[in-house]
Image 1 (cartoon, rainbow, N blue to C red):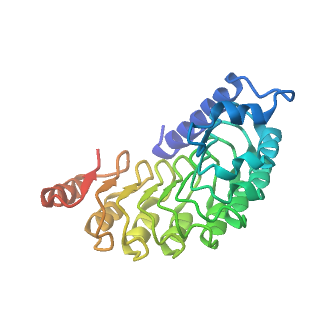
Image 2: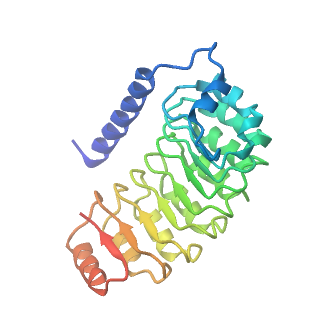
Image 3: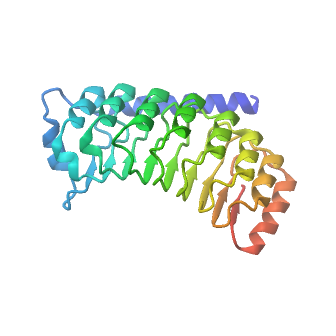
Length: 267
């Protein structure tokens, strides 16, 4: 099996696992009041709401969007709820989420239209962390994201396990829309050397501390460009595991790790 075929197989397997997870968890019944769930799953200080794995679906997301009790919520966990783009559109239009700072949307099949809703929301403008892994986001979604002004406060962006190519990575790298970003995770996409070199030459992430680019079909060319880049003065970890790396990367990483400034993880 070729490396490309192996990655396609892995992505299909990952998607199947996600679907099995969504099917395995009991879904929210139409009769169950979403307000009761909010009461049960809100933290004592009233700032965190965890609805992970409840499969509230699109209809549940729409109900959730209308709840005035969300006004004090700053952290919202919605992993594995199958809300899809329509559910995200409803949430993005909710004025009750204007104070939200941390949003976890792992495994919701949002697609590019879901990311479009977040990017165009008049309320989701205070986000400090946004977790979008396993959401079938492609370059089209990234193009919408980098054109948005909603992410000026963002410190953590997780886009791992999506469909981002070198073009999408280049759009991210050239964007000035993430001035406070500290953590960027693009693990298991397909950004290649083109994407790696775009980040290496970008001056838009001066405060970045953690950069995860594992399993992205990066070769020595892209890896060395990143390792030798002078554009990440605050970088603490550069993760390049499961890429197509050889002896040249090993030597460059060894030299960089000896300096002790940035930890290079490459195998």
